[in-house]
Amino acid sequence: MMEARFKDRVAIITGGAGGIGAAIAARLRAEGAAALIADLDSAAAQATAGKMGGAALGFGCDVGAEDQVAACVQAALDRFGRLDIIVNNAGLMSFKTLAEWSGDDWMKVLRVDLLGAAFFTKQAFLHFGSKGGAIVNIASVHAMETSANAAPYAAAKAAMLSLTRSTAIEGRDVAIRANAVLPGAIDTPMLWNNPNVKSGAETIDKRDVGTPANIAAAVAFLASDDAAFITGASLAVDGGRLARL
Ligand SMILES: NC(=O)c1ccc[n+]([C@@H]2O[C@H](COP(=O)([O-])OP(=O)(O)OC[C@H]3O[C@@H](n4cnc5c(N)ncnc54)[C@H](O)[C@@H]3O)[C@@H](O)[C@H]2O)c1
Image (cartoon, rainbow, N blue to C red; front, side, top):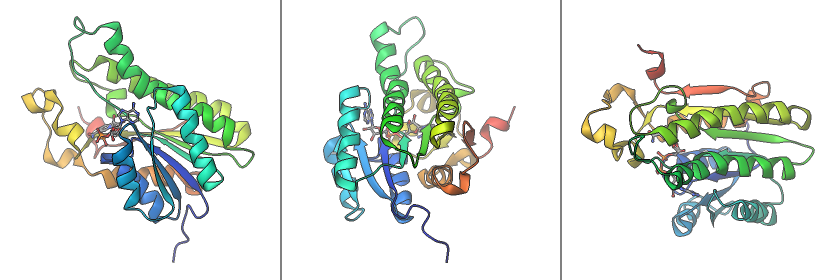
């Protein structure tokens, strides 16, 4: 039988209370990791962690607030004694035309979808220690191609790929790997609440819809030692959607 890839490893999964993040946490737990589920919704994070057994902890954290990110990492260290994996999955998507977005609107999206990942990346460099570790950033196919009315989201996700490359470069000498996953259309409320999808402006072929477990499998690979020589990479997990004209 295959050995548990994350035995004795500790992971933080942001936005892990539901959707894709919860599937990632469940997959890492199933392969032996202890998991801290960090989410703006503290009660939901604790409820999700509660279903995953003793080595799971739910923690309320706004990823856009640097002090809360530091407190979250400290909570993982206090509870589990080490930190090996960070999955930057928390995200939000808002919809307005380019003429409508205010500076505040832009910042609301950028602080969660980009700065949240940057703050956790900083903590990785501070706390992974000499053993190093792995960061997986959950971007989106919107990092490469996008649709109308989602400019801040697309910009933040594109910037996340750049952050991934910077992390790979600076991480090389301290054994920190960083990779990005670009989910396509994944069956969560975020997909079906998308007004472009609701209005039919963005059509979704059923064959293009993947599951949170599809994303979790890719994340587990990139976080594991199976991906020891993969860093700075971007992996689309989209059923081939980006490949099509
Ligand atoms: N569902 C899709 O089709 C799809 C496609 C591409 C990319 N993604 C990306 O995957 C990730 C997860 O998406 P999902 O579909 O599971 O969405 P979701 O809305 O179900 O989950 C997002 C989670 O992030 C949390 N969150 C929001 N703001 C936060 C903050 N400031 N601090 C901490 N947590 C916060 C929410 O409470 C929620 O639990 C997101 O980054 C999203 O952009 C999703």
